[in-house]
Length: 461
Image 1 (cartoon, rainbow, N blue to C red):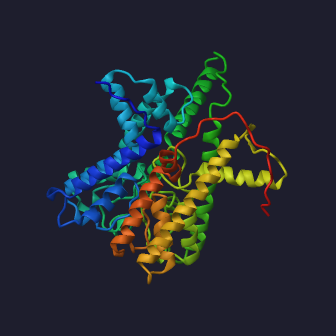
Image 2: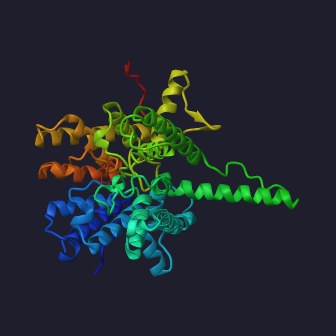
């Protein structure tokens, strides 16, 4: 019997992997040992999707509704979703079979942005080790910042540290505290707030950028050693690649500007209960958590209207590419801004750091922005249909949060009707796998043709 082999494109494998993981998580969360009280199928599906898509939106209280085993299941779903089930599958195939096929390397390479096939599984192994390493260091930092944990038993402190380290690095925003980081026992623990912020910032940078920064640090170290030992300079240009430079600079600018805006705008408002350095730490965490982390150190429903709009913009931008975070990504907004500035200057190409940006990258950036706004717009319209009496701001905030896999809420998610929850489930999933991946998965690619039509210009403005 001859079995016809079919090759699935990376987008189809990626989407299928997440769907299977969400389905498995839904069934596991329905088990009696996972819950303290009955959980409906729609709420189990919502929680599983939120965990796998590392969003953090909840319809039931994670701290009280789920048992230890339920919280453990959620933590494992977050971990699997954060790294990416496709990466896990590729690594398992590699280790169990002692190698990999050229086809599987192409599949993984399409999502890891590697140029050489030999680098594909090297990067994937690094992804796993870096993830586990940062999460372990983060868990130790959280455990240290807890102190005696206000009398919390040692076992609970260890699980709390592991759960929040994984949830932070994967930018999930789930917490075993009913009020999250706004809980009275930790809201003024500024060392804990700062440690968690650092963990999810690392997670939001993206694996290739973290690896590239580590390579750069090693290069700087070798240069210093070479200089001191008189063995010559180990100079290598462009150790820090263009992708890392753009995303690091963009992340730094956004973080600084967002912290300043929230610090000034909310100084005498939601930050009034904090003093001195505490105001700055909470402003910093509030400015960085919308970049898909989802932890709430303050009541976002109590923010001023202008700050809520600003937070929605931060959620839409999101984290860096190839990271555990969502949003349109920092590289996308950077390319859009650079392209607009180039057009304003009358230039026919986009240049930065001594390099010209490829036109395909510009096209993908604007396609990503359009598809995100289109998806969010459809979601807002749909929920408005199911929730006609709910304020538009609340609906829009939830949709931006779901699409960008942030998990922040104005406190209305649990009050949504079933139809609205289904819409948010779809938006969370699409936001995680990206709308562009969905289109690539289901639209048949045309074969490359060598002819070109004559160009025509359209009136734009």
